[in-house]
Length: 253
Image (tube, rainbow, N blue to C red; front, side, top):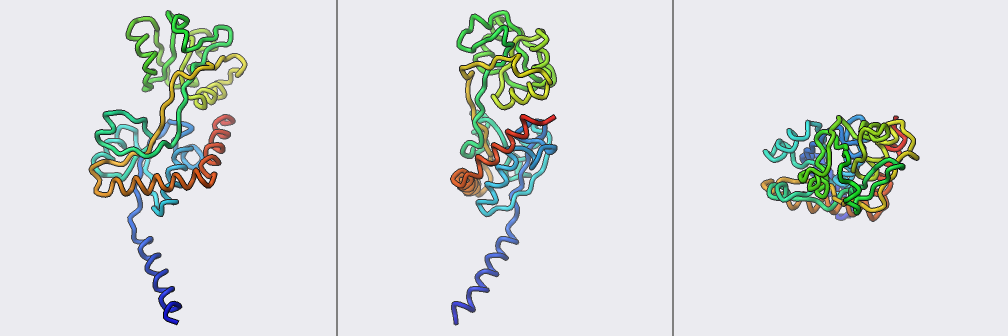
């Protein structure tokens, strides 16, 4: 009888605690399809993934959208609890704790099929014209060639424009994550058969969820998030989210 009386009270207290817990304030940015953009389904692949991981960890996410630099700095000032997705750098690690990887970016070199290029044959690239969208950072190996004056660079607005310029012969290649490159070709309207994708990867990087180090419970929040992310992986939900967004990215108009 005592147990029966205590159970409703215990459940009530638990629900009350969950209801009163402050949501986790998140911020991310637009124009990073298929990973984050408010016009994409569920705000993009990694937006859905981050929110689902927090829900798995028992946290209620509340998402805001800001220009990338503003959101990053606002999180550092404590206006948000966390931000995403970011590559790991020494500068960022000084201010933020990084989650387990959300997604691995595998960069490949995209060129015309009649002038197929591979990143391990650097002599092939000498004198070529690389297309790098505004705001993108060239891969380290390419940066060295640019600094040495062995490559020419062209910087249009986006990767889709790069695909069109390469097809027209005005540029020679671009480097991007496999999925981003395939999506850019699809959106450009150019036949996929006109492009060569390098067999060898140029490099790989991982994207992460970031929590400011100076937040009082930073490690606790990060551990909870990583636990939620593990549960998504173990259940197969992680792969389902990735596959759904990949499919959308490759058929988007």
